[in-house]
Length: 105
Image (tube, rainbow, N blue to C red; front, side):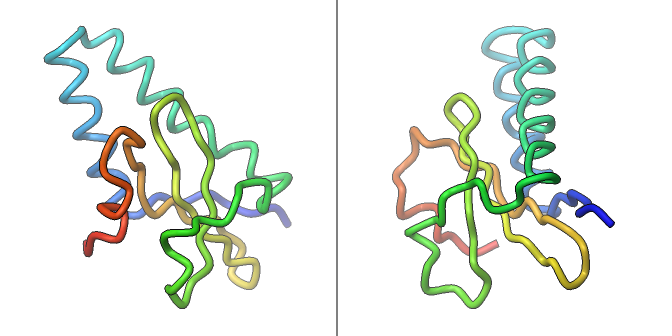
């Protein structure tokens, strides 16, 4: 059985913010293309869930986080092999201050 990708409510809210920003600054076409690209990026994890590097700034957490990079965004995720899913926990704009990644949700 393959792993299923799920998105946290926080990651989904980040996608909404990214879309809203680019819709205002560029166009709905640009916003849609970017968000679709972000959403499709984790599909490669289904076959190789540990290809992303470990996220150094979140090493002190109980859950082990990895990340993929798509354009200017880090997709922070964890793998739960026992329950059969990969959870996208955050979509983080890499142009922000890195310690901000530790923010509480």
